Length: 87
Image 1 (cartoon, rainbow, N blue to C red):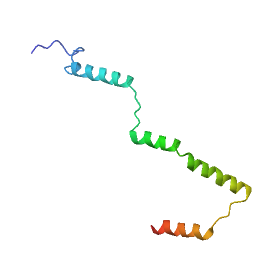
Image 2: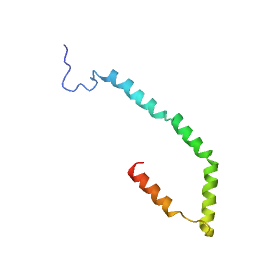
Image 3: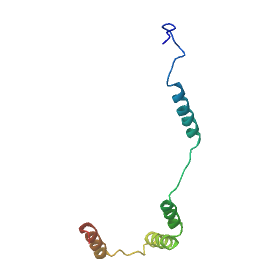
Image 4: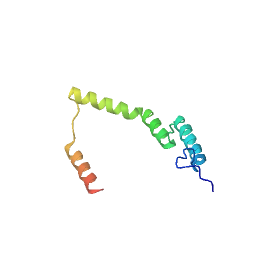
């Protein structure tokens, strides 16, 4: 083994291993992508196609604003009980 002095600045046995990793990092940073799952796409389509629900909600809003909506307190209480008891 030959020793050329205490300041061997160009000696790095791992240099060749580090370069490909650095190149990979730079290349992967350039490729940002967004992938939406099929389930998310289906949920988005379901929200768009729910026109009957939106029409019902709009009709209820109009009834509440005009004072025509009559609330059934017994049915509401029963549904709350069923929800919290797990029925």
